[in-house]
Image (cartoon, rainbow, N blue to C red; front, side):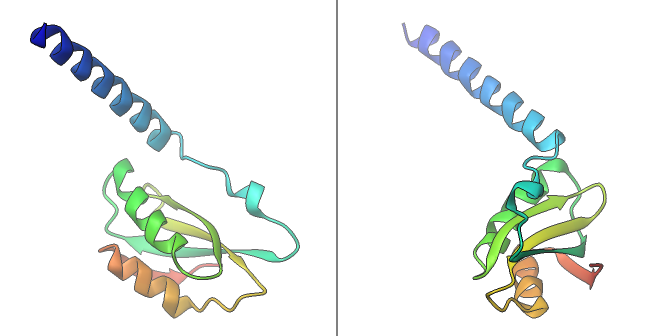
Length: 111
């Protein structure tokens, strides 16, 4: 009985990991759904992302910055796209601080 439960658990865990990897490889969410008249897109250079799994923690920390509507990191391009609400002041320094907190190095703002 214990052996069957263990096999089922490992199977479910494996399926979850495969689905997670597919989501990472496909690039995740599309930021166009968050764009409107009051939201603006910013793009930053990011250094230190070495794999598809790196972006999740970075995106979570960026989303905690007040005024950030959504974010998407791309480890292959070494870039971070951030959608900000233009009604709320979001400084580049706030974004750079969140990048540093995620243990990455911020480059320059590209857009």
